[in-house]
Image (cartoon, rainbow, N blue to C red; front, side, top):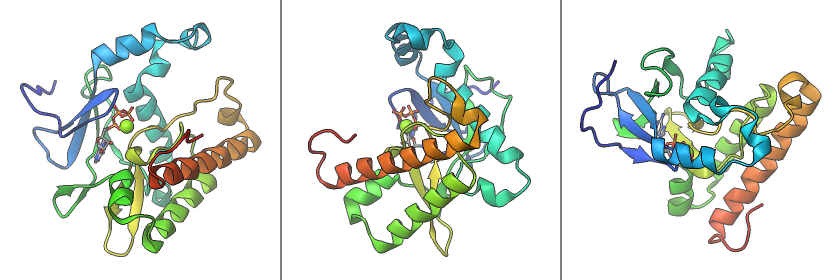
Length: 210
Ligand SMILES: Nc1ncnc2c1ncn2[C@@H]1O[C@H](COP(=O)(O)OP(=O)(O)OP(=O)(O)O)[C@@H](O)[C@H]1O
Ligand SMILES: [Mg+2]
């Protein structure tokens, strides 16, 4: 078991704390914040409660989704995820180990930070289009795609968008998981909503983004 001791997270979202792996700085360990997890479970509507606790465990869902993607022998289909480096240790409830996305030693910035700093440049627009194509070509199911859940890896030739949170389907009835027709429709809708959210961020977050 990995002891995080008094480690300070390098980032924290609404549900998880993210740590640099104490034995390998190329890895990230995500630990679910127990308080926000219990509150989230308590406040679920009944129809979501019957789906079972584990479907609201972000580490569990993300691990399942990434392992499905990296099962694909064609490694180009892994391009936009932080590869899972360790599926079993530490166990879900304790943390999920993935690749830590970095640029020249620095932890990669999110698309949200980029957009606030530089706006929608031609370069990032092109990267977002490449990411969209990957989502559609591989029928990658996601929750709503929010710019703070995408980070940017500069691989020398291009800025590569990587999704580090929000993999898995949000559909109550899991048709997109079983039928390509529904999956395509579902992914197209997520892309449309991703653009609404990007434009909302860029416009100073006025009104509702959906
Ligand atoms: N693999 C990674 N590489 C680089 N940075 C990361 C990685 N994973 C997470 N981060 C950073 O940590 C932040 C929080 O992580 P994450 O989104 O997984 O937490 P969360 O609690 O699930 O978020 P949310 O509030 O969206 O539910 C991200 O916005 C990102 O800045
Ligand atoms: Mg997040």
